[in-house]
Length: 531
Image 1 (cartoon, rainbow, N blue to C red):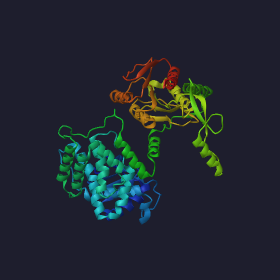
Image 2: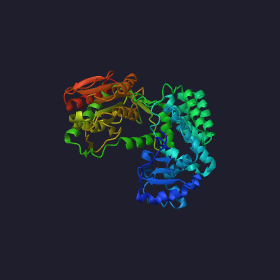
Image 3: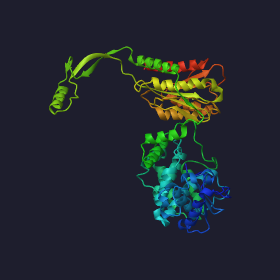
Image 4: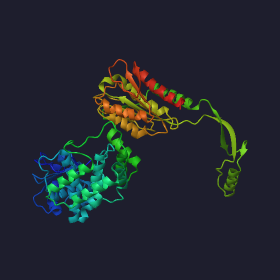
């Protein structure tokens, strides 16, 4: 969740300069003494620089590297002009951030320090270096703030545990005390972190990072001591747990992730829904090799048939009811009649309905929220065509009041075939390849799109797969979580393939792809009929 995995890397960089970006490298090398007061630094700007991070400082080489991806094209502006930084605020902010490290991160982690302690020390160093830089150059705050609000990883809080809450506090709340961002910016983040850690522990962590802000640039001992203190506050014993804890893949994201999403959406000028949609589109779009085609006549007919079945499932057994009407016959409702008269006297079109008549209407039923996960691994190749059709058929058969559906394919990654509430004009054909590592992401994506864990709604998850997953334990925990929240899981397994059967699922063996498609449609209709 940091701006890069490691901003300071000992040893040497193997990045070679790019001739197209040499003007930028030369211009920022001449400019960096203004930011640092050092005249022994060089700056390299090139695509792919910084070894996978947005930017990086190599102290042994006295070199700052910046990935040109965060600038754009070399012709976007002239880096030799003072005003160029306004056109590339992210790239220039990275330069300022690494300049802060080059000037103030003059300590090195002692040998033998447990990795988790070193990680915490690096987290504390982020806001400490920026705080020290801002003290020297107050005008650079705008660039540092821009980097913080654009390059924080939205996946940095995958679970609600003390470790990740502490990370979020160190990277955002500590920057409030460093006067890089404001308390208003991180209000939802502070509330979420407090919910996980409690007020007392958060106050103790704040004392730690405020002590770090006053630590001298060369004081490695104090930074490491503060990192040990941080671990003790979070009830982590580095001697027993020397490495940073990994998130539990079998747990859904919680309030920390939502708070971080709200923060990033606010800084991007978007609503949380629009921001989430943008992130999903960026991460889960179909690969370029997957082709789109026109639906066949058979697929159109299947969509019409399923639409009829879904409507009938909602409209059977009409019940006596009353319905408002603007004209008789019926029972006169005096208050509404007065309102209609007043509207007419005012010269406007009456909208009130003075009469109430007896009628028969279908009983109110909830909307079905159905997510279909299709296995796109090589072993499921015979089912790829049918599952591609299923996504299109469900999207066109379900009216908004009948059902909201989404179809997600999972192979090496999770791919969103059909988003909710969309009626695609073309069928996106799955191109099976690879394994099934994307299953966990697919389940979490389905929950994000349809809120499958939210009580009070009719929901269902259908999976078409042989169940041969590389990580069945976290997959089982996700399935169990859905089951206990009231979301049934229908698992359709090919009868001719070996696989794994998960508990807390309704598992059906299917002989062919058509039977799998029929089973999904039947389950949707049955869910509506029994609701």
